[in-house]
Length: 152
Image: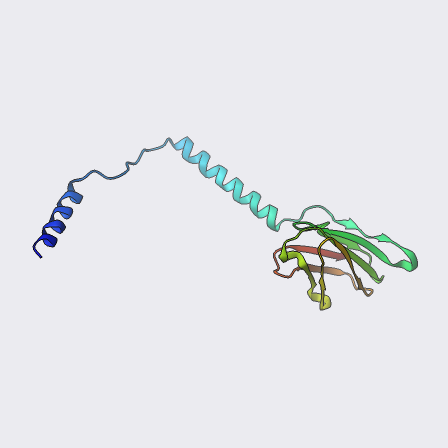
């Protein structure tokens, strides 16, 4: 039993007299400012990338009887992710899924109470009735991949 207190006393003595495992190297102020500036720029770019508006969107083409149509490719996201359609006209959205990820196996239009299952390597259509002007978001089943439908 006398061995344990002796080891503890030795460890306490050696820990207080030993050098630290690392030492601080002071950096020049210019380098500190450069690193901080690059960090701020990267944060701003990330916010723009995930929250910013990218382009004006793709306008749906008009088919027969005033039916608007657009094809959206699902591959790691929606392409295009921003679509523009005219108000008061019916709309047909064709989703072509080529991404095997389970996240994008569904698309949800919460404002229309519509959910569409998207089988892999297939095109699935969704028809929406004439809609009032506004912005209508849509997203995947996990709400990670998003798109916007702008009705003008």
